[in-house]
Length: 507
Image (cartoon, rainbow, N blue to C red; front, side, top):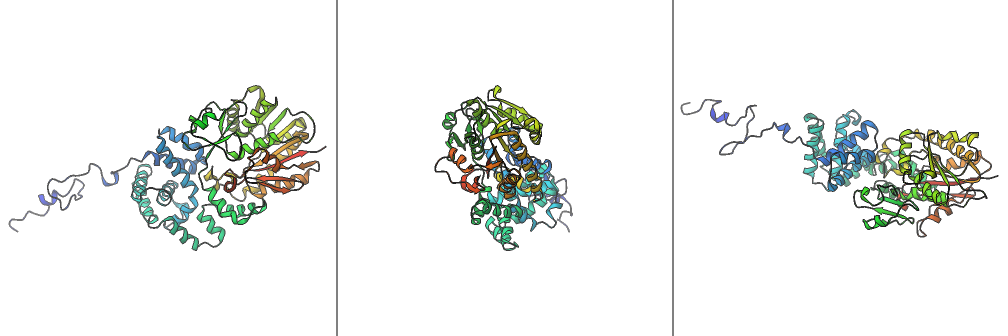
């Protein structure tokens, strides 16, 4: 053994750090060691991904809405325009695609997804969206998501996330779609997985298309439209606002109705008039509903001075109605029972001269009492509903609703419509609106209402809506009873799936 160093001597020691780990085998010259342990080499989360992750955590753990949480997070972390756009696409995309991504993850994780730590599941969804639906290099999607998990959840879970996401990355989205589709038990289940909707909503939307006079073959186009990021729609309050500044800032004139615009260029708060409240962000479908109620001719003579928005929160339609009321010397009562939503209504109405409106906080059903009988000329009933018409705008809501929610909602919708019928005068009009195409929340509510009230009549809602829309806008009306209803669609009109029926009280 002469001439050899004893085992554990200098030649071995130089290859080990203080933890006993060997380094730099095969290198010549001085060895270089990392100052951090291997599990700590990158713990800093990318700010944009961190904002998206924290948004998903709020949505998952606190039933928050992404459209309320995300802007606050972007401001808190001071993201620039590029990072804000990335965080928005990542958060909203992961929420929209949750059903598809969960179906993939369920094949790769050795336990039910419900048994995973919710934070781990949110991180996996973010990683899957980057890998399968964004132009992010695979190595960046993997490395950054694992770093995020290590920083926010821990080193142990980050290993699981790394292993699962590597298996997700083994196939492209189209291959996963084919694999999962081949194992689906029905066509609706296949569409539910492919387009990331709960199966019951897929079936409900198919029925809604048929109920509103459209072809069931449009279902896939409707599901695809639900997964598109909605364009920001603007409206200038009549007589108070002006869209010229918005158009100079890059907005484009709306294609569905006059005095509207669309905006695609970042922070909408910088558009002239938005901070002042005279130019507002409002889906074009909502604009149509408010304008149609205001524009329709009252079927019987009488004054037209007292208007009621029975379920006014958060205040978009109320602001548009109040601005029109100013032009006609009418007065709007905006009722909203939830205190936090009532404050939103007040904020929405603040730009309108205060002498023309008031906010009340009653349960809308109280307007069915004798104290309110015949008090109003026009009543808007934008009733609480499932929100199936706004899945583009609130992607998380599709995972929160269940079929059992519908009967309770339709009962409330009928009660609010009855209260409005009591509150409207003979010859006055009611605009019944839901942001849902579900036939139980639309046509069936109206049919049941007409059966309960012999002196009620459905007006030609289609004509009223057509009067405020551009002449070349796609038709939306469908005959019912002696009048017609209107159903807008994301894949046809580019709006939320808003329903409207305009009714009147006969003598």
